[in-house]
Image (cartoon, rainbow, N blue to C red; front, side, top):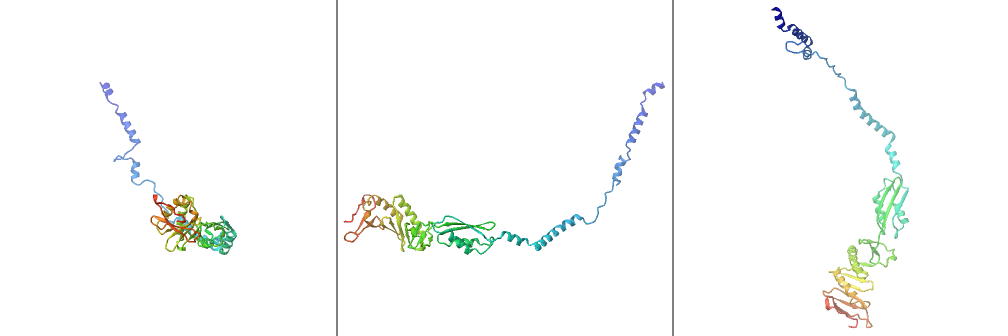
Length: 314
């Protein structure tokens, strides 16, 4: 009976040994914490080293370095004067003058002499605007451009005036109606003559360009355009026929007349002295002097079937 009881009892001593082994591996206190964790909480960990209270050397260097550098620059400027050395290297006297452009009315030698009179400074100190203005004072020079070319050269580009017409008895006009105040151009006598007050030179040139285009389209050529003190226009053809256009609608009147000159009056043109277009619906003719030395006048309509020719004997 006793043997059977021992066989049925559980192995208690084995479980007790397991519990003891578990307790030896990990001992816990009453609150369920390990001694290591408890030690960390109680401040048993390694103590951090205290920082030095001395002023950092790097900060001192960072503060002093700019001051030392600036002082060195000031000292070098005072001792070596680099600006004056640089100026003497860059700002040299002008030794070469290159003059470019097309020259028909003025020569390079004339421009060179004018430039030499105007230059009195070095490369950088030169007043380019004053030089341009001085060279452009020549009556046959339209515009001037000046540029520096390092180290000691000036490049001057010259654009001459291009005369389009004679202006009065002495001067000329360019395409902008600007007066070219020169009388030394006898080879330009073939240009058309424009006449008017100097204040209205541009107006006369503009009207000439309009009239001339119309004449070219009709195979006619202008020899003279005039604007008198009453603002009345008149033109003269190359065969010396004078056409009086008046103050109003000058272009329209001239346009109507060109057709008549090319058709109805083509045989009579050599006998006509003046055509007066200052009429509302027609014009008057003044013939060249006949044997009686008295010019005759006649009127001819400009519209439709009213056109009729008048010969010198009428």
